[in-house]
Image 1 (spheres, helix red, strand yellow):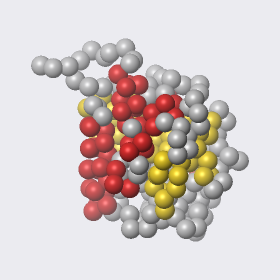
Image 2: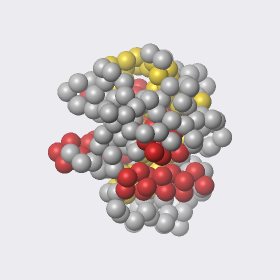
Image 3: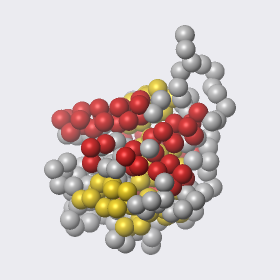
Length: 230
């Protein structure tokens, strides 16, 4: 048998069944295409004991009580079981210094887990796949994100109604893309490879080719760690 690729754990779930299945296919294609063996979990699944990397994906809002706030009127689609599972997985990954990629909600969860907060509603943005905003992202030179995608401007999508700004960014996290006053990407320089982006690089038809290269860099980071017994 040939050697397997690194194993990535990800949570692919949501209350909207049709949208969930469409998102699953995109994430699985992106992660599998980068060389990962994917373990996809639903909120009530048990967390695996061993894995090489963690991808935290998009979805509904994080329960505001987890960052010490009451819910704003616009905050919805809460899933406490998913919050619980992803926070457990993230703690396990950080304890072992495994590569972590956060996408949209995943960026927000990493920020909350590290002591940050969220802007609970941003006008003009939407989760609807039919109401996307495009931006040019310019990753900070020398960042892990720039290593993955280049530090030249490239087009990214945006369909989030919550966000991170520098005044709610968790201590220790470093912004690597800023757009219109929002932190659209950050990383944790205290870890081997923790990168988070507010956009959706798995939606390949909506972004520049540069934006999709983050998955290959993520898989390369997972492959460079000591191999598990396979």
